[in-house]
Image 1 (cartoon, one colour):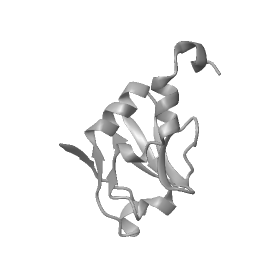
Image 2: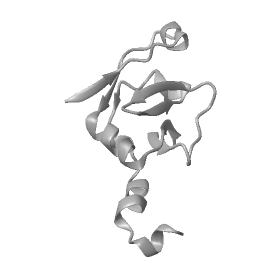
Image 3: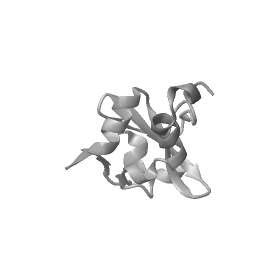
Image 4: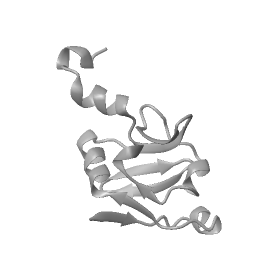
Length: 106
């Protein structure tokens, strides 16, 4: 089952954007990390990163994902209709979950 969050800001409505679905797995992933995230543009397409990597910009759209917020670059927002775990870069997950404690401080 997917969570659905619809952005209600005037910027969202004026741009003619659509509803954006957020998978429950993404909401859980964000809650476990206890931080807001941002979808930004990379050379490989859109990526979902913690705001400590990519801080939000004033032009971003903001969606609630549980208790946290996902900011979406205005350049990506018109193309995003589904936020899923495929947007999380492998290296971010690997750093958070696969390395032992001795490497987390690097």
